[in-house]
Length: 311
Image (cartoon, rainbow, N blue to C red; front, side, top):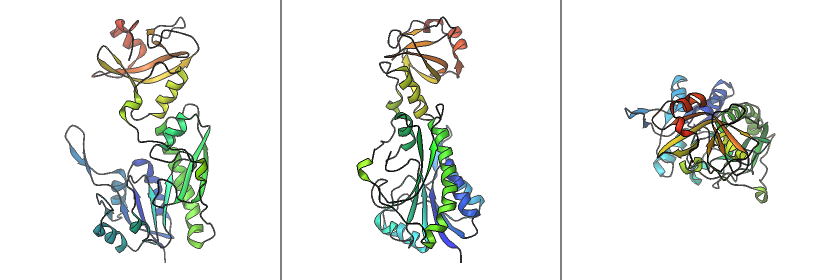
């Protein structure tokens, strides 16, 4: 008999994990749990999560409780009699009575090498910290925030140009492969969970829009790293003439300039901003209410941008 698995997830980057489970002949995905549909866009049309969309394509029953913290929702979950629950970026904490349902526990894919970068923004945390290596962890969920024992790990180098969106997608592709390798060993007892060393733990926080505001007193290298860390959201942005300017492509270079002031370079870069250490070349940007522009076109349209003080 195949193992009965409930999958819990939300965004597009965890769909490969659902696909890997569905393709495994030793697994029966008995339900996919994902948050309720939300209104999106100008028309405020209800939109299903990518996990729901994929589950429906695969004829997997979909459950969308607003919370699992009530007896009806827990009872409904128990009715699927899962052997194991697999969680990947679900976005909701599982209470103790839900965690206790599957005899083989709840396995969670977390995109960092735990106990480093616990919390809601581990990929951003790794890039901000300048980590050369991160990875994906499969852990056994408990009631804490990413504190459960570790079942398996896989490392991944952080490329110098990697942004959070690209790295997250790559890590969850790694995670899908790691889960396919690990799940049979977990179910037959040939691998066990190892407690985390909480003394080595670091923590990340939920991202806020204000995190993306460019502090020009920082170094150019740090600002470039923040753009990578905050892609796709909240990005890196500043203020000019009462409007927001999104900085979409930047490069730190040696040099000195007045902090937050826009100049040009003798090397031909049309937009260069002084920082606390070094210069930040801006190659693509977007003024509030306008289209994305490369630096040359932007300066042609707004020559007064040169010499402006940002922020």
